[in-house]
Length: 604
Image (cartoon, rainbow, N blue to C red; front, side, top):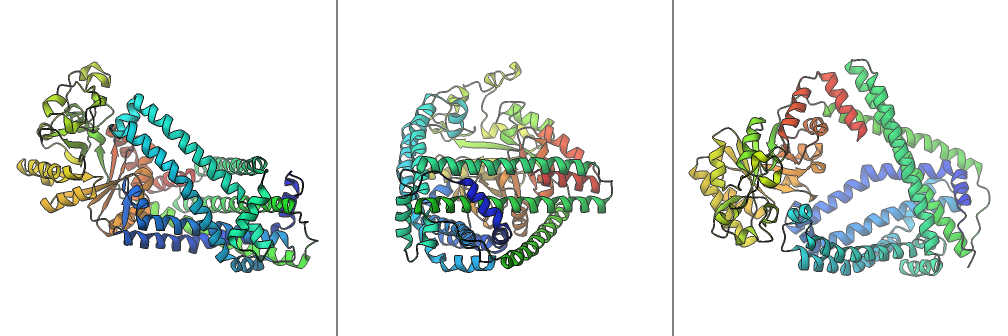
């Protein structure tokens, strides 16, 4: 073995000598991945989800899908391909760095020759990580079963009782240990790519074993070196983004109030953003490839090659210019197109008071509903469960811990028992003392036609789904309120049963996370976390007459982006605050709306 230090300066010099060759390769790979490889992988995931029987998987179903045969196959196949694509880029860069007579196109051909072996390397690494994940999941599952399963997850994270900390104390060591083992194994295998490239003929599994041999006793130094490289790259990216944000805000604030100038300035800034970020990404990958190659050379005792052919340098530099201009043109066209599409003048959007309004009054109460009406919310979202005596109570958590009733579940309490608890005193202002959790019938009576209801069903398991749905639908039909109500749930089966009983009522699916295309669900609206409420989802959903309702939006800064994305409804704890921002936006002209949207795009 050679000396155990890492000559980073030599790795940086290698990149500097070959920058006109390796950067075209790296930049070209980024373009290929964005325009071709990523869409193909996305299509493959969609096909696997269709085999699972659903076009979309959200919330708790994500875990269920991942543990199914189709889900495991998706994780193994998709993860292996993603690792292989990463290693493909690294392989091409290392071939170019190791042989200075090659041009960037030869780097592509060399990486393609090793593609099938890179897939097998990624597959074995992924399977090893899944083996490590088994005990981690078992430990977290045991913590959940022993300490968390009898609690409502919302009250558990809000109140943080003793069981919360006991479960956390049990789960965290499993997670940290698993992460440490996974990181150590990935470091042990980090030299497998150069072994495959430069010690041929050698199989992918033998390359992993050879990498373990080369890195033995060297893991702390490798972790420090690669961790430092990652930290430096993240810091450089953060500084660049901050500088671009300041520059963009300065430029946009000084653009004359003319539509053509606003569009031109914004498109130019988007082009600058895209070009610099693509360059930073290519530079980071290239430096990682150079450093890992230098590690391999020092451990395996291989010297750097002789000087390159200058003719290759000129050829590669021309390709760098061509690829750079092509990438910037694509980024500029895409940015301009997105900006114009974002300039929506349609501001027909409604506000829903989350939990009937959880900012100015106790959530899910008649007091909150009254405040939501005063704040001019069009809808009030409420949570409905069945009690032990079959009544329908408006309450979010599946236990009564947050309203002072201890760890008893709602399913084990009668309506009368729940309504003995004072849900108003703990809220804060003394004016709410004595407020009780209402029954659904009581809350329906309080609407008096002044606000519509979005009723979230919270069944206590599969056996409770149909009785809960039937009770809610029967009560709405008896009060002649089906046309003024919506029914939503995280249980897809529950809302489909509601549609069967009352085809005229709108149904919605709630998703905090998603795999696949949510717009393919048979629903009228989607209640999604803000991060999922993208323009792409909104447009796909609109084609199927499905609305998108993001939650829980309390910061007014998100009103403009969500409005421009085409969302039909915003769910918030504070409808008055968001109503004020919405009215401000409605007073803006076209150019001001474009400028506002451009600022949001550039800040994102």
